[in-house]
Length: 122
Image (tube, rainbow, N blue to C red; front, side, top):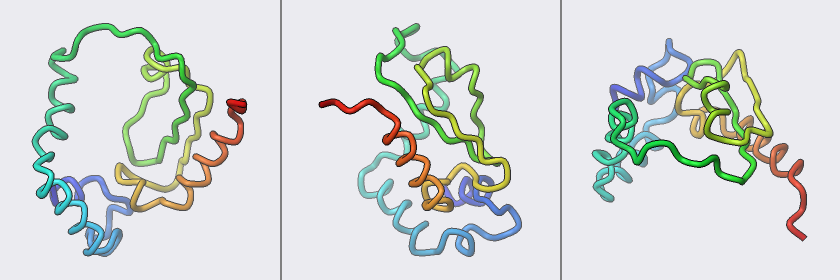
């Protein structure tokens, strides 16, 4: 897991514990260890490429919001094939794969923006 933190944490010129904080990394690793979920979490990446999932699914009817950080992988035209994207934000200059940890404020603000634009459920 530390290898992934090293490869995917922004900024790339810092060690992950400098960018994210050692306690935060240890907390993440501990959660995976104690819940024994590291293997199943990694499997989804490999299974998606091999077609191990149930095949084509209907698009969910819920609106979807997404934020794409500069140093992560996300391709809108592929996402739109599976989801009704109503809110898409591109952050061209910050963030990596672990944006939930390294871009908390920006991510939370975008989530608030997406949710505030949704129609009220009544």
